[in-house]
Amino acid sequence: MTSAFIWLRAVGLFYRSVAPFTVGISVLIVGAGLLPALVEGGASGSRPLLVLVKLATAPVVWYLAERTRPHQYWFYLNLGISRRRLWAGAAALDTLLFVALAEAVRVSFVALK
Amino acid sequence: MSRNSFSSVGPHVLEADGIRVAFGTREVLTGVYLRVQTGQVVGLLGRNGSGKSTLLQTVFGARAVPDASVRVNGRRAVPAFQTPGLLNYLPQAPLLPARLSLRQAARLLRIDPDRATANFPELRPHLNQRPGELSGGTARLLQVLLLLHARTAFSLFDEPFTGLMPVHIEALAEEFQQAKQRKGLLLTDHRYAEVLPLCDVVYLLHQGRLHKLEGDVREQLRDYGYLAS
Image 1 (tube, each protein chain N blue to C red):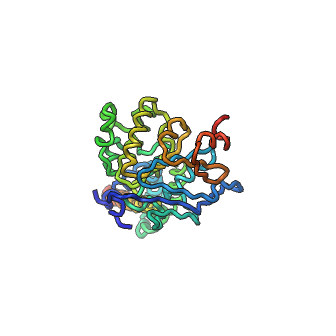
Image 2: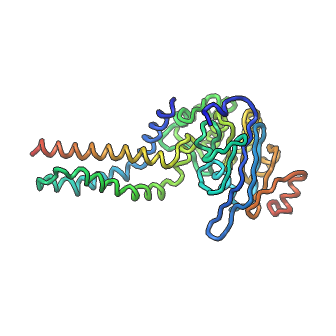
Image 3: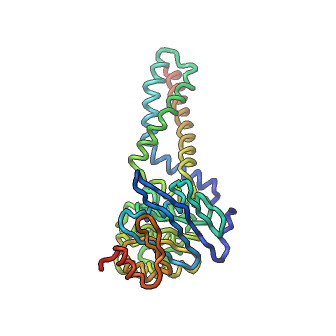
């Protein structure tokens, strides 16, 4: 296995452990931010703002992960992956999934309208 | 350092010094010098709260300490865990992710689980289970075996014998003796009766300082108040 593959596998594994927090927040932002904008017809151009709001919640996810699973990093450190690289990968993956979720909701809303 | 720096057979020397750690106003580690080399089992003893785990974590690189110097063969390696093939670390807490079977985790860690359990055939069926499905002792033993058989130049163990039954402690001690032929081992555990016969070098962490014990180790441990007189 290459180092890149191990890193990707590790990020995926780590993301699954923080997904309950991140997915919950994503659904909350889409439900409270995007859907009302779509109903009111003012959703165009809201994507950057939503992504910024999503990124602003990262410290909350970090805090919850530290509180609930403080020992989960040892495995990744033994893989040679620092906390910073792990979180960077998870944040990138989470942002991609958030954008995909927002787009899916937007497309579905337009199709149903 | 290159990926192959530690894959070759040959003695390696791991040294750490300049480690100063304080929790609030309490200085936990001061003036520490630690040395481990290939072919050695080095024991680290000390009272509860003396900083043994903190020291291991600092050497591993998980704990950032400004003036800490960790060197391998004289070359700086900070944080050590980022140097491929250099070392691994077993914490007191469970190591492996709950979502992976031990075999899957071993694959990610680039360890052959069947080789690691060659002397423990009764453990083989457990390799396909997740850590949470095993007893604490069995999970602990498998984690120690996996790290012991990893292709790293050094392994650091924080309480490897915790929860193990006597027959497994004896067998594991034999594994340590075999493993030290190809790597350097640093371990801390309060089971001194099992640890002392294993060790080529014994350090005692006392009031923030690391003392290398030579001669009558048990007598010195009594003098420092680690063993009852």
